[in-house]
Amino acid sequence: QVQLVESGGGSVQPGGSLTLSCAASGFTFSNYWMYWVRRVPGKGLEWVSYINTEGDMARYRDSVQGRFTISRDNAKNTLYLQMNSLKPEDTALYYCSRAQIIRKFSDPSEHWGQGTQVTVSS
Image (cartoon, rainbow, N blue to C red; front, top):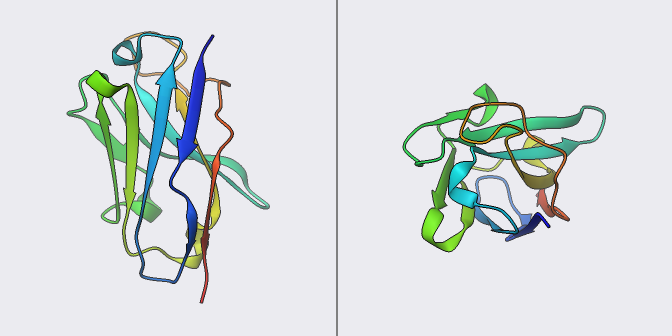
């Protein structure tokens, strides 16, 4: 059974930082590209970042480029998202998800964790 458990969210002032973690189990973590996605009121789900199986290639949506860093530790079955210079528009419920197709770039699946809330306000 695929399980994804996000943690590390919280409330922070604009300009602050948070690091999110996603603990994965129930599948071979190193065989999947991984995503961070977020649920934004009025917009629904949007992808934030993704990373390949080896962890040496990644992409970010334009609004977080240069501020967020995705990484993974395959030995620990854990995905990370370091978020710096946070803005109010980053406020959302953040989820991790695996790609739909093993070992290939593909859209995120519908296997979600419980999510972790990030709130950025003054």
